[in-house]
Picture 1: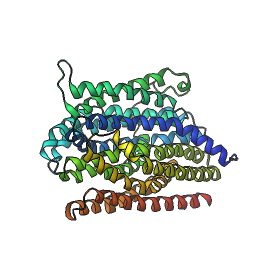
Picture 2: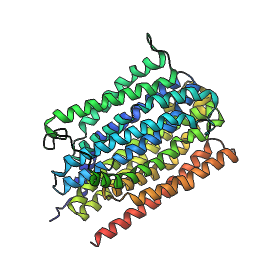
Picture 3: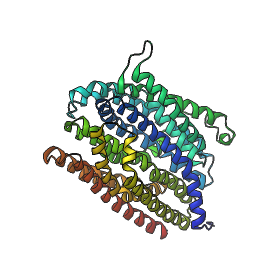
Picture 4: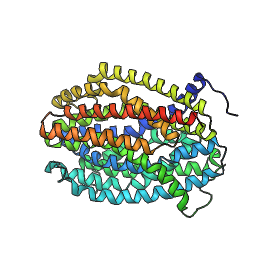
Length: 448
C-alpha cells in the first residue's frame, strides 16, 4: 500500500537532495565562469572567441549528455520498485552508450570549425575558436562517461561524491587554464583557446576520480558496477536511448538558443559579443538553482513513479513548483539590486560593462518562467515522459525563438536586445505548454 507523505517531509527531502546537486551544478557552471573571466581579462577579442567556441560546443555536449540523463529516472524507478538487481545492468549499458556517444561527439567537434565561415563569424575570431573546439572535443568521452556515473550516484540518493569532485575541479582548472593560456616552457601561449585543452584534461581527471571512488566506496558495493564487463545489450540500450534521445534533443533545443545567440550576433562586433556572453554567463549561474531543483524532482518523482504512488508524486510536484517560485523571486531581486557589482567581476572594459548591465534587465523578465518550465520538465522526466517535452521545446525555441532572433538581429537591426526578447517569448511558450502537459499526465495517472 502506498505510504503517506507530507509537504514538509517532501520539502526536506527535496532540499537535502538538491543542496549537493546545486553545489555540483554551480561548480560545473563555474568551469565556464572561470573560462569567461580569465578570457575576459585577456581582451574583448579573446572573450568573444570563447563565446563563439562555447556557443558551438555547449549544445553538442549537452545533447549527448542529455541522452545519458535517462539513467537517472530509470535507476530511480528501480529503487522505488525495490528492483536493486536491475541497477548494475542499467548502469553498465548506460556506460557503453556513453562511451559510444562520447566518441561520436569527439569526431563531430573536429569538423565544427569548418562551419565558422557559414555562421559569418569574424575572420579574426576563427583561429582561436577553432583551436578551442578541436581541443575540447577530446574530453567528450570523459564527459559522457562521467555523466553516466553521476546519474547513477545521484539516483540512489548519494550525490555528495560528485559534489566534492566538482568543487575540487574548480581549484584544478585555474592553474590548468593559466598554463595553456599563457604558456610555460615548451608550451606556447594559446590565449583563450587554451581553455579547450585545460577543460578536456580536467574532464578525464574528474572521470577517473569518480570511477575510482565508486569502485572502492562501501555504499556502492551492493551494485558492484565494475565487478564485471557486460557485452552491449541491444534491448536495454534501446530502452535507454528511446527515453534519453528526447531528453537530449529537448536540452539541445533549449540550450542551443542561448549558446548560438553569440553566433547570431557575431557581426555586431567584439563589444556586443563580449557583453552578451557576460549576461549569458550570469544567467547560466543563476539557472543552476532551478536546474538542481529539477534534477532532485526527477529523482523523487521517479522513485514514486516506480512505487506507483500517484498521490505522493503529485505532492512532490506541488512542493517543487512552490520552491521554484521562491527561488525565482530571489534571483530577480539579486539581479535587480546587484547587477553592477556582478558585472565588475567579469570585465574592466567600461563599454562592455555598460551593455552587459543593460542586457541583465532582460534576464529579470524570464526568471519565473524559467524556474517553472525546468521544474515541470524535471517532473515529466521522472514520469518517463520525454517525447512531449521534446516537441514542446522544439516548437518554443526553434520554431518561435530562433527565427525571431535571426529576423530581429539580421534584418531589423535591433541589436543584442532582439536576442533577449525572443528568448523571453520562447521561454513563455515552453513554460505554458510544459505545465499543461504535466497537468494532463497527472490526470491520466490519477484515473489508473
